[in-house]
Length: 329
Image 1 (cartoon, rainbow, N blue to C red):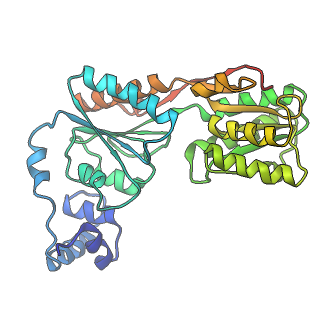
Image 2: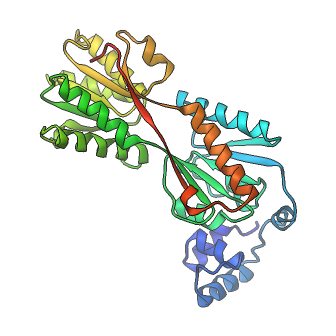
Image 3: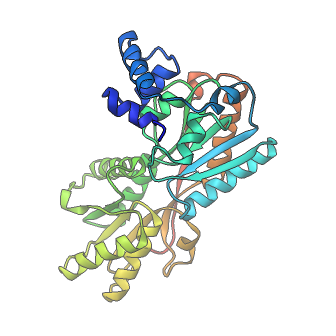
């Protein structure tokens, strides 16, 4: 069985990115560490994919897009924008989903430079791996996260500003308490939306209560179960800012089952403005951002980087948000 980069990292007692630095002769590690890693690699008979050297000599005319999962209305709109821009530029689009397996096809596509550039929507790729992979020959665009490194560009939603305006709207509607229903703590989007929520409460002179900050998983079912437990305890929040629309729809379902009316008993604001938000009963007030345009923007940044090195000032772009007022507040 052939040794993998993971085997070399484990045997050498270093990270996978350090092995990549050593093999690719990058100057981010000491000469001693490089010698040690190369010695271990030789002892294990580790050989990097032979396609990598060949691919560096020519362009593949393909762009990679990497997801954690294919599901969800946000990804589909972003992907549609990316697809349009990529095909208009005369490139092929290679799409991969991944769940963090370091020997998966997705990792190989980047490690062996089987594409000319890539757009990353997956947090399964850790920062160290992306930093060790990105280069002049393989620029990367990451969405909804910030990675400080040459040849890596970030496209972000104004999560903070959108959450600030949503929370402020709930307080100004007369709510004495505003709950926050967030996604996982590991989610960049959720943490920025939490920061906006906290800042808005402070701005409005409202108290931040840690018991009002709830963690969920960004799914409708997860929010439904979370709220059902809350309602069964006899706790009915005056209002809830949900960190995405899918969880807001889960709040709607739990409220209906407990004979609670929106907005009479609970005011709700979501985030993302997915199609279902407009057709919910009542229609959901939410924070809108340009998902399709975000995909186009990400692809355009990538093509700029492929053609010529981008300036540092171009490494971060933020998509504006807007509060869409409907009938749930």
